[in-house]
Image (cartoon, rainbow, N blue to C red; front, top):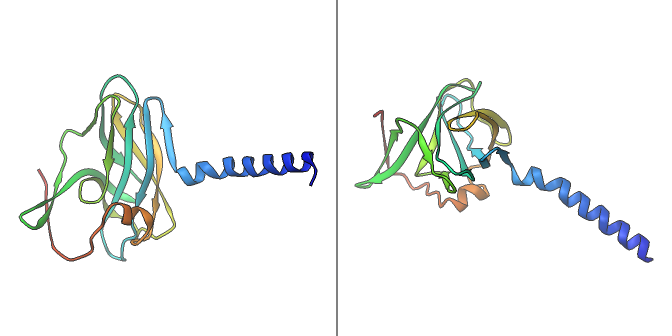
Length: 173
């Protein structure tokens, strides 16, 4: 292989790697906001609720507040927090929004803060993308897509999901 062929092959490989990166990264940036890897999990038929997870970074100099979200796939979307209390998983609606302090990242993940997609129009199916608009105080709305990932996918494993029973208590505050 001559030098020109090697250089051309190297450039083609590098450009194909660059082309693939955005699809793999699955993140969105707008102004001081960066939304990294928004995802959900599949729902069985008849299940009225879905979830939304992601990392929200604020690179600006003042706090931003996630105040809500909307999707054509659900009647409403609200912000919730789950936590284990006395062996029971409890979920509470977050009133007033979720603050993302200046220069920090807040992660919406299983067993913590998350979006609750309420009254789904149809089940969320593995492999699909669900359009979602996030609304903020201190920043413009941003449109993202929740990638519906398998229950045993890499994001579920990295979040330490435990499918070993236990109760769930949901309350509206």
